[in-house]
Length: 248
Image (tube, rainbow, N blue to C red):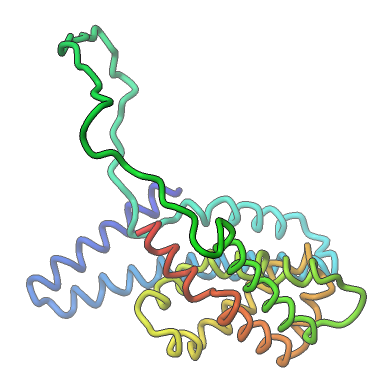
């Protein structure tokens, strides 16, 4: 099924490319509709998965078919990398018959002259300057979220929830990565997709962090506080841009 869907997407891409080159508006529109339908299909599966994960914490569906569909979608979604598929090479019948080693002569390693890389000396702040900056970010996150959540929740719980769980979920969003790359931080902060993806991240994290997730889902103030914290000391925007550089 995966190969069929990926092939269908690739064929639609080729049709769209050819239609655009030939200035065939009708064919280009038809091909674009095929692409949009496949992308929408993927998004609908992701929405189903999130809703099931959220609602299954509240009540029992009493229908195993719904859970089976959730498991199927969960396994299928990561494989549907539309636009990033590559032609596979069948190596199943390749047999190593022989190999050769060639002597390229002896070489001496000179240790008495020439330029060698040098270690950077310690700065004025010592070797812990980066760690100190990271600690400052973490302390700022804790200070900002302390007033957002109520109840018997430790500072460690708050920090992990915001900086690891929620931020980690948002880092998985291809939509936010794209927007962080193509927009300024101010534009990114005002994106409606950021609020939608934040809500999705909260729902995904509900099972592991039920108390804080419920407060975040029930309170616009808490969600706004989370967004401001993630854009500030949480460095979500910068982290998304760095992720794009690591995974072009």
